[in-house]
Image (cartoon, rainbow, N blue to C red):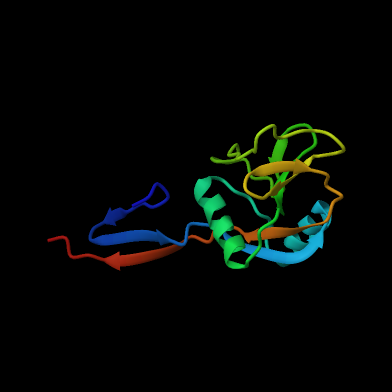
Length: 147
């Protein structure tokens, strides 16, 4: 089992969570970061949040399967400190995959896009983007005869 899985035994019951990762969506219409954020909040949960390398790999698989090979907006931005669009501050909120010499703050580069690594960029530029739905942890309960 991975670190996101757990088992609890209660008098013969085995409880397993399933589907612990976010569900990501690739949107092909280029928008500014703020427009993309509004779109994602209306249709899904928010711009994509990535808590770890597994989330990043899941997003990369989505982009690859869609044939997309350039940068996409996701939910990291800065006004003073880097933070997630959805307000996420839990375990993994500090996860970063910056490219060399990133982030840099020139010409209002306060929003982040992902290509091969993460780069700061002008929020008013139009890029395709990725939305996500929050974690949907479903519980699977299995009865086990432990005798």
